[in-house]
Each structure stands twice: as C-alpha cells, then as structure tokens.
View 1 (cartoon, rainbow, N blue to C red):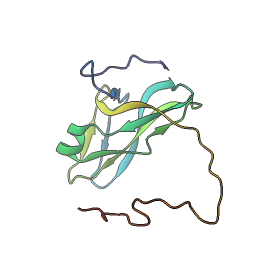
View 2: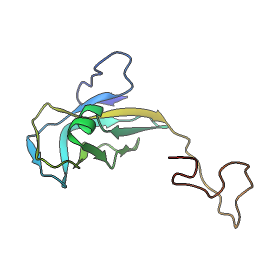
View 3: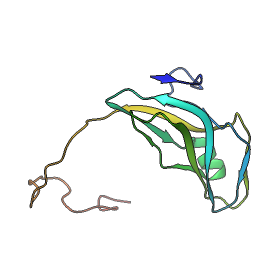
View 4: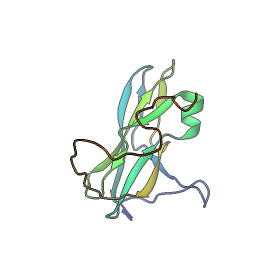
Length: 133
C-alpha cells in the first residue's frame, strides 16, 4: 500500500493504523463533520480500506466514524466523517488521532439476479436480535 504520509500503529501487532486530523475544529453535540487528514492512499486492488472508530474516542467521548470505505481506485484525500453522539462539544486539534484504518481483502463478486434464493439451513429471514440480545 502507498500513502502520502507515514502511518503508525500504537503497537506493532495492532490491526489498525492511526489516522490523524490535519485541522483544528469543534463538533457540537448531535452533529457531525468531515475532518481533513491531508492523507492520500493507494489501497491495493482486491482490498478495501475501512475507517473505524478509535475505542477511546468511542467509549469516553461518544465520537464515531461513519462512511468509512476507501475503494482501491480512489486517490483523493481521505476525510473522516465523525459523529458526536455525546452531550458536550468535542475539540479536535491537528495531529490528533481520530480514526483507525484497516486494510481488508475483498471478494469482487457479481450477484446473479434470481426469483428465489437457494435453501440454507441457517437463520433464514430472522434478523435483528433473533439469535439473542
């Protein structure tokens, strides 16, 4: 993978690479913002970059990442869509770690349109908590 900035892991065996803000801004409670990173990536073909919330921001401040798929053909700036689900204003400074990047292999599959799906002895149409809380 190629990147226009050095990416770091907090620990050598961590799955996620830290993504930093390149700007200062504040997100009001209940609002969201697209945060600039100044980062451009070349995700390998057959993979996808996935932006995920950092656990500390999520649990301590209720800051969550949305719209987190980076396709292999995208070459624009990686911007992070952050939601403030908390009750206080959240300040971000340039250089703050705001998300983590996972690079995951994908199966580039086409789907055949059918009138009926094949049988499966699994869940069927049950979803949204059907297997427990």
